[in-house]
Structure formats: C-alpha cells, structure tokens
Image 1 (tube, protein in one colour):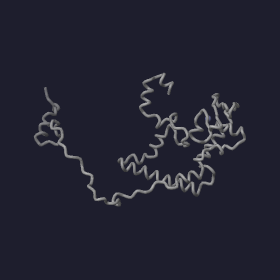
Image 2 (cartoon, protein in one colour):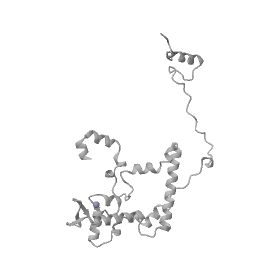
Image 3 (cartoon, protein in one colour):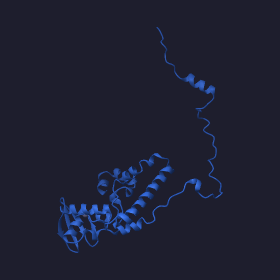
Image 4 (spheres, protein in one colour):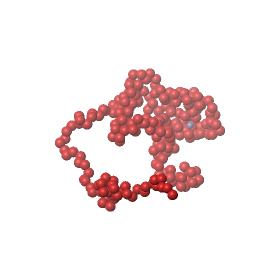
Length: 235
Ligand SMILES: [Zn+2]
C-alpha cells in the first residue's frame, strides 16, 4: 500500500474509501485462525447466496439465516459422529499441502530459534517460539505454511503439534454445539395488542408536475402536440 501511495496517491485514497479491512487479506487481523478469509471472500459469499439474492430484503435475510442454521447443524454432526481424525478434513488437506511445499525450501539457522527459509529465491523469517512466518500465513490461518513446515520437519517434529486448536474435532464440536435456533412464521408470533405499524402520512404530490393520469382533455392536448408524419404528400 505504501508503494501504491507513492505511485498514485489518488488510487490509494480511492482504495482507502472502500474500507479494505473488510476484503483484503493484507489488512485482516492476525490470530483469526480461519482459512476461509481470502481476498475473494465477497465472491464466495455472493455465490452462496445467488439464489437468495433474487428475493426481497427480508426473504434474503431469512434465506441466509437458514443456510447458516443448516451449515452449523451439519458441522456439528460431522464433528460429533463422522470425524475420526484429530483435525478437520480441510485442515489435514492444508497440512499435506504445506508438507509437499516444504521440499522446495532451504533452511538457514539463526539465533533465538528464528530461522531464514528460502523458497523460489525469496527469504522468509520463521520464528518457531512466536509461531510466525514472514509470509503471515501461519499467524493468520493457524496452520504452518510451507516455510514453517520445512523447519518443523527439519527438527524431526510433527507438523500437527503446531496447528491451532481451533481445527481440532473437540473445538469444532464446542463451536457448533448450540447453533442457530429456528424462527416461527409471523402468524405464530405472540400477540402484544399494541398498535400496528401505520402507513406513512398522505402527502400531496408536486402541483406543478403534469399528471400522467390526467383527464380526457389533457390527453387530447397531449395527442395534438405529437408531430404527425407526412402522409404521401404529392407535388
Ligand atoms: Zn511462511
């Protein structure tokens, strides 16, 4: 962003107006431990609600609530019965990916349990005590990146021991234990005997604006003002 500000201050100011903390990974909070927070999260969200977006606002919100309710319920079933591994399926896939990428890393030892790991000619500072890497993936996602994984393998330790607790079966079960409760339809809501919501006060329109639903005379006047085409005028 500093480079962008130097290159084009107007583009930088324009980008700042869009509140990048809500959509750019570079501004996301460290320690959230969620690998769904990517730059394309708005596209993912829009794809999920593509059917619901055709509805009016209240129906749209109801649809989103139901989707969240079902998602939470399904995740609890997975965590409670089906999940036989220590971590979630996606977390294990991410660990495998990091292990595969670690073979392309070169390690250089430094003091205080901090190391420099090079991949594709770029060096990354990996702090094993702080559990952080210069690429920021480890501290943001909670799963070691390929650079950190390279260090963990080099120490002959298990990568799983460095993965955040949030991906364990136990934490998933705790997270989705309650979920979202169903909502009953409007006819089943309790009656409070209060005044119903009143319509807005009646207001006279702009008197100077010609009415499209005027009387017969106004319509005739309008017809007279329409220019007529020449009908076969002979010379
Ligand atoms: Zn890294």
